[in-house]
Length: 267
Image (cartoon, rainbow, N blue to C red; front, side, top):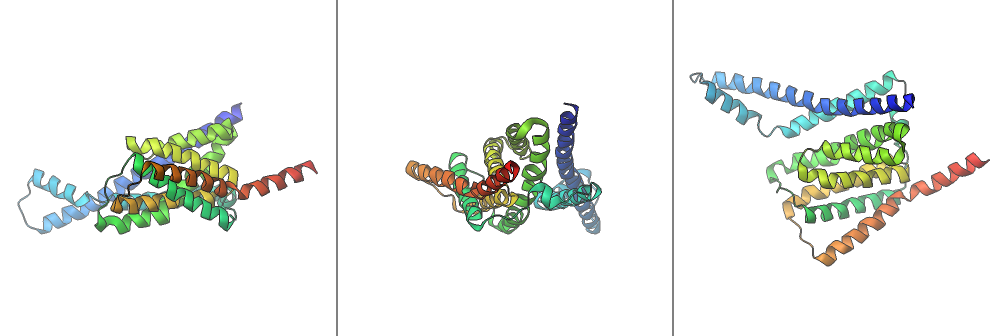
């Protein structure tokens, strides 16, 4: 019982460290751009008015959320690599970066697309500015799915499962995953998405399947913000069926591995 409690605390510490990276990144970015704004303001040679100065810096810093995310992701990856190096553990083996069959990856991608269209129809998102679309796309495709899956379905899911079992671990990590997104509307569907991602990760035994589903979900959402797709009720039913079948395909490659494991244990 003591070991399980300690394992649970370690998992909570890891999550708090994940949140802290965002705070540190925000502070660093705000400090950097505030200093840059102050320097440019001073070079204008205008009289120093405190209100105008604050407004100038605020305008300069506004819209730098993408930079904050980039710095935050960099900190998370760096901390994870250092932590696993100090513990002398292989981060790829621990988090489940194993080979995934092409068919299961395709299933995960299709599931991600279908699930996003369903979530978009239920809770439409704010329209995306085309000028920042490229930055959002890079963050959604290249970084967010990998980093978030590495933390939640790679590290935290395994740590929580040691203390409270795989089912409760999936629920806890999904709750934390939803909370980390902040906005009330996002919390609802990101919790459900977290459960589905946990299911794919557990059943497929490969983290890459969860990354693929998450990637497809995010990139579909980015394009949906530009096109505002609308489906009929029949269309949503078909999307739900496609999502369910695709999730099953995404989980399929773990069946053979579990069967082989049971056979080896029986011998």
